[in-house]
Length: 389
Ligand code: DHB
Image (cartoon, rainbow, N blue to C red; front, side):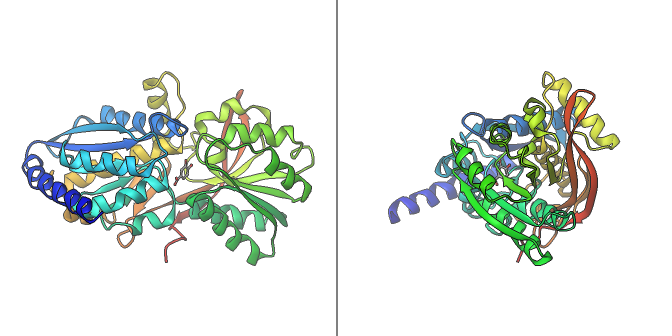
């Protein structure tokens, strides 16, 4: 064990020495690691499309440096694979920046690589609060479950929802979501009448939904990773929960724009809190959705895509501040405090946590001109991650 670890560090150090030469040149290489295949491929597909769109709309150079993206598919399920790909990208491909990270365990496994190599790591998708604590080189442009879940908890508490049954995917963001919801809802007088965790892979929701129905709550709070919402929604309707008057609430992952329109009638009325809706009413978003759909055969951008798009914006604007240099901590320092108007609305990278502060919108699934959208009807402005200690 000890030898292997030493060998890895030595290889990494050698690679770094070489990497310094490449970094002084005219290209900034970005190692983009995403689940392009496997159960979370929709996240990879959305983030990659947004990264490519950002480059298409803003040019292939930033601060005079050519931007080169090297995409690696980590298949989304094995943290060691993501970590190994990050090491290879640094040592062999000499990337100056790591980016992507579709799921929390993959981001967490890679954090020590960023720290050892002093390479900035842009988390564009994963959403557990703790991730930004894992390395001082991490910057996040996605969101945290605590942001969305705390806002839907406050909304539920003031919307005559008294009894809630929680169902979350059994991994870090699900547990963050469950805890944030409970800590926001219970002190306002709400009661949690049951809580269940579903397996991350290949979940069959039917037995969980039956137990939720038997508990007769006012609402089910659900968190599932992006891509799993359609199967859940179908079974929610089939099991008769909607018919029994049970509302469906949660962070917006369950009504993911990528697959929302295919969910049909069962999704209508679902109320979620989240940072992005393709229906967000702003000129920046209208232009984003139009350009994204045009470049991707009509695919609608979802919240994951916006994490990717803003991640590229952060890289471009930070390079402008550093004169095109990516010297580990100097790059991260230059990114701190950055603000801009994203397709999602105003955002800020908090200087002390390197995490993103953003509006969280409350939305209801509605049929708009024959298509399903998360229609925003309220918002909480500039929510900092409540999960930071
Ligand atoms: C994470 C993954 C998701 O697909 C999602 O919708 C939210 C969070 C995660 O692993 O952090």
